[in-house]
Image (cartoon, rainbow, N blue to C red; front, top):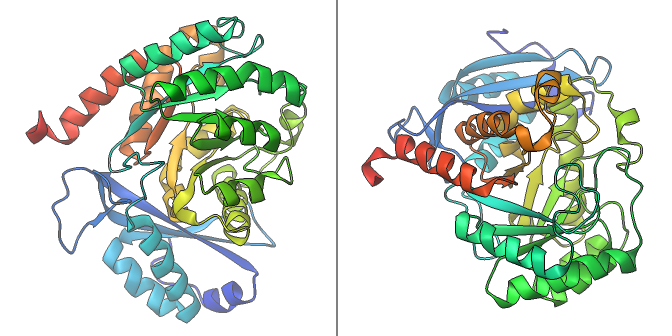
Length: 374
C-alpha cells in the first residue's frame, strides 16, 4: 500500500484520467464517539479507518490504495492536492450523513423487505401465489414475521427471462398492491415499466424498486420525480434476457460503483434528490460468482454514494459452491451468512424471501451490536 500520495494524483483527477474511491473500514458498533471514529450513515455503526483507492482510465483493472485511520486520510488527501482533498472530504461527508427516512421508515437501523413474487416463473418461488388473494395473504404473513416493507413484483427477472407485457404485469400486481396498502403495509413495486409504476403508486405503493435503476423506460425518471416517491436503483447491465453476456468487469465492485453513481446523478438531474434514493449493487445480475464475491467484500464502498443501501442475496446462487449445494429454497444458510456480513458493513435494507429466519438473525445481530438495549 502507498504510504504517501503519488505525484500527479490531483492533476490526473482534475483531467478526468483517474477515478478515486473512498471505502470505510474497521466498522463496528462499539467504537466510542470521538476523534478516532465516525458515524456510518447515521446508523448503529461507526468506522475508524478508511481506504482511498484509485485507478486510471488507461489501466482500470489496476487499483492502488492507501489505508489508515480516517483522520489520517484527511491529511493524506491534503498532501495529494486540492482536487483529491475536496473529493475525499466530500465522500466522507456522504458516508457519515444520516440517511433520510424511506417513505417514513427510519433508516437508523437495518430493516427487512419481504418479497412477494406474483409471477408463475420466478427463479425461487414462481407460481406459489396463484391469484391475488394468495399473494396478499402471504404479504401480510411477511409483515407479521418482521418485514418493514413488502416488495411486490409481477415480472420475473431471472437470468434469461424475456419479460411480459404491461397489461399482464399490471393485472398481476395492482390488486395485490391495493389490498396490502389498504391494510397499512409499506409496499414497494418491483418493475421496470413506468406504466406499471404509475398504476401501483395510484393503488397505494409508496416506493419504486427498479432493477434497471430507472433506465429501462424513458418515462420512469420524470414519473418518480413528479410523484415525489423514493426509488431503489439496482445495478444491472442490459436486461435479464442478455445480462449474463455482459458480465465483464475490470474491477467488479468499482465498476458497479461507477455505474450506480451515474444513475444517481441522472436521477438528481431529473429532479429526484439523493435523499430519496436507495442503491442496490444487484447481486447475480450481470455478475458471475467471482463478481458477486468481489462486490460483497466491498459493500461498504457504496456508502460513498450517500444513499441508503439495499442488498438482495436471498436464495441466490452467489458463488458456485452455493449453487451446487442446494436448489433456491435450500440456500437459506448461505443467505443468512451473507446477510450477517452485510449488516456488519452497514447495509440498511435486506431484501429477503425467508422473513422469519432473517428477523431472528437480525434480532441476534442487534443484541450483539447493542447489548444495552436487550
